[in-house]
Amino acid sequence: MKNIDNPSEKIIIALDGMDKNNVFNLLEKIPEIIWVKVGLELFVSEGPDILSILRDKGKKIFLDLKFHDIPTTVARACFEASQTGAEFISLHTCAGIRALKMANEAAQEGAAKVNLMPPKLLGITILTSWTNESFASDLLINQSIDKRVKHLAEIASKSGLGGCVCSPREVQSLREVYPEAFELVTPGIRSLGSDVNDQSRVSDASEAIKMGASKLVIGRAITKSNDPAYIFKSFCDKVVI
Image 1: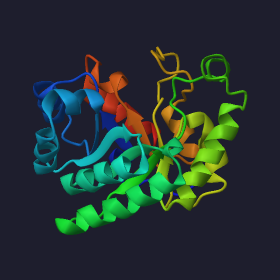
Image 2: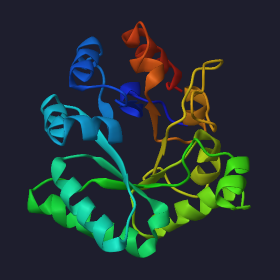
Image 3: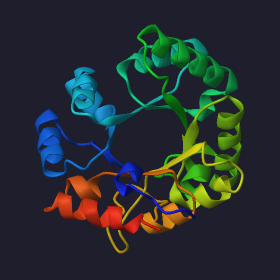
Image 4: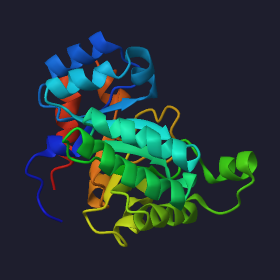
């Protein structure tokens, strides 16, 4: 495993549960932040202008709206989203190969329309809140989550996506198959012994990086901390190998 020159590049701060003022305060406290994740909560409450503001502050953006619809609708959404300047855009892999291929092509076209680098589309595999038990009881799916994630990652790769989103539990098995250029972005990062909240398949930051994660999505552990700058630095220290 190669050394990481800038560990801040490995951490994406999830801005969930925050408003615009909270976000600005956090960025002032931690100017070292490079990546931020704008999810449904912040996007719906503040609108797309928040993306322009974050770009003006020099931040890289993971637009995590998890598009999932019929192929034409997903493609049109990615066409529009690609013009925001976001570097990553998420969509559900289970939308199917046709939808993913159309979305990828549309994202390329949308970015080109406004002279931007095209974003990497990331396929959501299985959300970290799911367990094998809830998978079977709620969805009547008896296939293990591990096998389903492998299948969905394969669909993402075959469709030309730039990577996928998976829990830390599946990172190692996927990295054995896919090269570093295929992004494996992992939420569900917790400090050992901390509250997992509503996520089930979690891991420590250092372990996730060692297993092959490209980037770690970390939210409440930092944003809800009494000393977010200190906690951010502690996570940066953990990803240095």
